[in-house]
Length: 195
Ligand code: GAR
Image 1 (cartoon, rainbow, N blue to C red):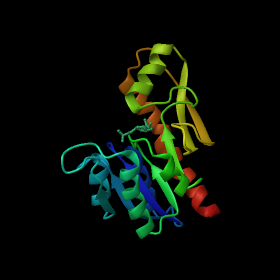
Image 2: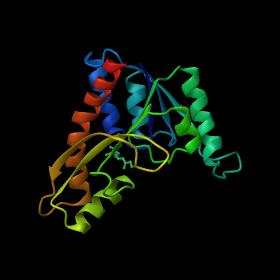
Image 3: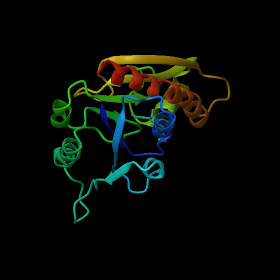
Image 4: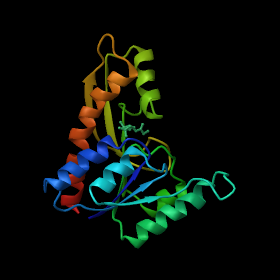
């Protein structure tokens, strides 16, 4: 299966996938490119180190104005088509994909989210802070297919971990990411083997 990763942040989960590829534990996954919307983000650096092609797609036009969602996503799709991509893996992709884009890849885009969806959709540290503010004793991660609604599509896997006294959004992020690093490669392995 030809895979594209979309990333905006540090790329912790990308590194976990790259490590599995390097160890030969994802034999049916051909990680062809990493698309980023933030130039020089950690994910871009990690991909470059692993000799994976990185493409930055600027979310702004020449006048510095934000591109509309679909115009941006048509560029994403162009690169995915060029590389014959079968599966898109979001690893800390901090942009909402347009319905147009999602319709091009039905059940072929997966996302990892740092909470037990449908609880706490949203972005990264905000999610962990919301868990802390709610007083929940447990949190976790969700891997799901992407549909036209944000943080919503069919759930593939959820794993839980405790919220401990004294936790901060950062300490919770670390604990949840231990689950993410373990289980995202596993789900990719299963999807690519079933293909
Ligand atoms: C990841 O933990 C991922 O679950 C989350 O952002 C983090 C990025 O990690 N994704 C979302 O919040 C998507 N809504 P990183 O900073 O190590 O790259």
